[in-house]
Amino acid sequence: MTATDAHRAINAVYRIESPRLIAGLARMVRDVGLAEELAQDALVAALERWPQSGVPDNPGAWLMATAKHRAVDLLRRGKLLERKHEELGREVDREMSPDLDAALDDDVGDDLLRLVFTACHPVLSMEARVALTLRLLGGLTTGEIARAFLVPEPTIAQRIVRAKRTLADARVPFEVPRGAELAARLSSVLQVIYLVFNEGYSATAGDDWVRPALCEDALRLGRIVAGLVPLEPEVHGLVALMEIQASRLRARTGPAGEPVLLLDQNRALWDRVLIGRGLAALERVEELDGAGGPYALQAAIAACHARARTPEETDWARIAALYRDLGQVSPSPVVELNRAVAVGMASGPAAGLELVDALLPEPSLAGYHLLPSARGDLLAKLGRLEEAGKEFQRAASLTKNARERKLLLERAASCARGEPPPR
Amino acid sequence: MRFMVIVKANKDSEAGVLPDEKILNAMGKFNEELVKAGVMLAGEGLQSSSKGARVRFSGGKRTVIDGPFAETKELVAGFWLWQVKSKQEAIEWLKRAPFEDTEVEIRQVFETADFAPSDPSGEIRKKEEELRKKVESQRR
Image (tube, rainbow over all chains, first blue to last red; front, side):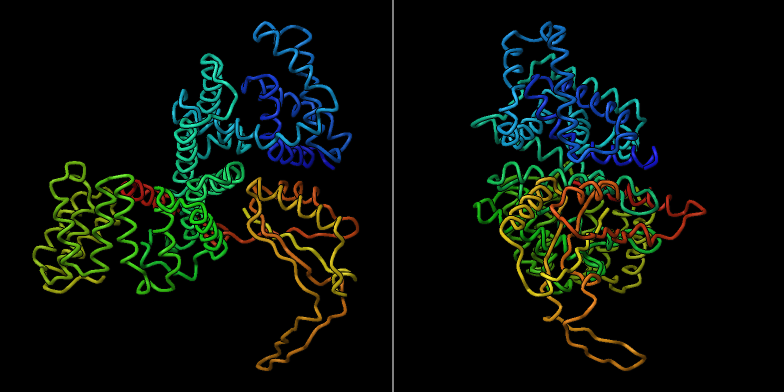
């Protein structure tokens, strides 16, 4: 094995092992930052030793043993005791006893869950939560996170250092929140994961494939959390939503990198494995009586599209009903606009137009090009081409995207000629 | 990135003999680890080749050949589809699998990126930027 091969293997092992390693150590030392330092020290030891000795048969156990010894050294030298209470020292000593090793294994899930909630703690900024979650749970390096978010590596490194300090200063306990707090904290975790997913989802063309890899990272995080809290329906809702959205990654852009809208996508390119996984996660949501949650509803809408073999088969009535429910649990003018479009497809353009018109006074939609664009579509379908043309013009003046502007102006021109625009 | 992990047949799998309870338990535990880590996308075990068939294509002619097939070690007996960050990660996961006397193959699945045209003029990158802006503007 060459040194480079060995380093690659060690980094892969670390990626697999580090979340459990850090989680286990954090429970011992009650400090996520210190736990990660200990894990990193073990990694450095591995990088020194394994290229000669080869990767041990149970690399995770080797890393944990090395990190634990280091923790004990620190304790003995009193460094930890300066920072921590004496009782903690006794606890660590107790946990160091070999008979407890087996018991520790059973707690891995609990430790990981504590790590999830700590990394997504509300005392941290959203940016810090994202960086810390990818680092501690996703096993990404600082460099990988920096490339994915298009920021310099020192920025991410600093963000992580500061986040750890904030957690320590705020004395955030390493624990799973209970009772009423759990729901709010879980929703923060899901928000972090979905934010990571959307970072990746917003960049899916061209040769920069680092950012789309964030979709995979988010999916993995989502699946991990779903395994840790299997009875929480919204986690499965989020996983379902991400799996189904990710199933369309291949179809979302044309050969020249141009965006392809949902109804124009080649459905043969949709990833059936991910759709299957998404639908299965959605079934789990329903078994848990969680179909009314915001992620579950968005996933159910995505599933309506995923189930339709052709755009014509789309169950628009169900989509409209789901948007109505979504608007009730998380009201937003954009949700209402989507509902209007769905109603227009299900019950005809007049019904859709009525809902869109009701949104016209909405201040938050004033500069939103999709409002006049949707209104133009509905008007054109009703044969009111002159008004439709004006709406497409207005939408074109609002969009910041050149390609989309061109498309909207074409539709406006078509209306001006008295021809209904395509689609 | 995704990898298909291909498990080869052996005498037992070809004879339709199911693995004993110990192996099944160990494999169940390994699968659980994969699921918990968010790595496992799919996985199936295949029945013996005696229950399968082949279609041979020769010009316009199609000939159906019923199983079983002789070259046991070349036959596929099962597969996993894994999502991992690197080939090394797939290798490290596979090393944890409870196999004893066999060879298991790891193959990378093509991604869209592998089909993307090269971008000498930076045109694709530019388009990506446009797309990014558009998607940003569409985002709720």
